[in-house]
Image 1 (cartoon, rainbow, N blue to C red):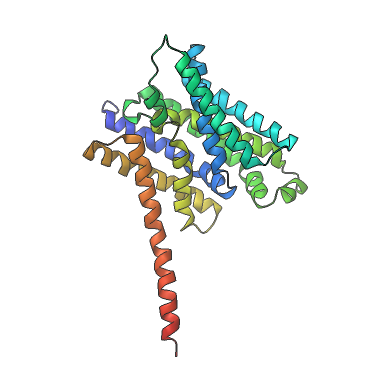
Image 2 (cartoon, rainbow, N blue to C red):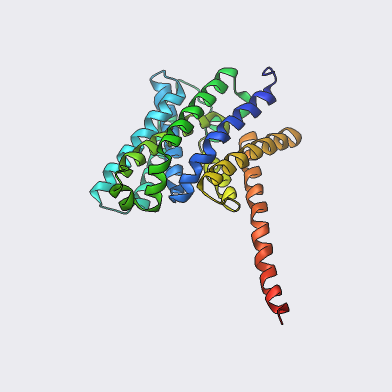
Length: 274
């Protein structure tokens, strides 16, 4: 069954979408989109580190993303500049360091475009096992942290008063982001992973009746985007990773239609009232 490259790509992409959907909901709720982009940009430095030390790239990406999270927390405590400014500094500095490090590895050829934009059609059965294993770990820890993370999203002070340890939950959440970015790198690439985290969650938000429903809806939207994106990539010979993101964006635009229709009908209905 998994001998066909398209089937492997489809299974791998859906496995990733199941993990990024619920995690992306917290990214949207907590307005951490820029944080996700910062961690994604740091992934290239992780790749360079892994190549230099002859490690698995996923391990290098996770280590560097985790270190960036720690650096962010430390700099936030210093309080010299605002968090969004820190994220901008870390994002561009990490990406620049990664590009410089890759250029310095002149003795080794690195598929920079593959790391930046992914190559889901090249995933192996072993990659699929890592994706589903890592995804199961992420979802399991997220389910364990669901209540403290949700409470801290509403009010960190309230969560602290209830003894839910919002700081610890935030640190673990950052590590989960690092895991997802590491396993997603080969599929959609460093520059597109943030899109897969944010767009399906934003799409599900248009219809969800509650947090849990939005998490399920985001996973479903991600799975549909993977199927549509890969099918379009196969039909029109377009890059697979960007095609998935374009499909996710198209679903988001479609999700906006019912709300826009209701808003347009409301004034007309008011005008018809005697």
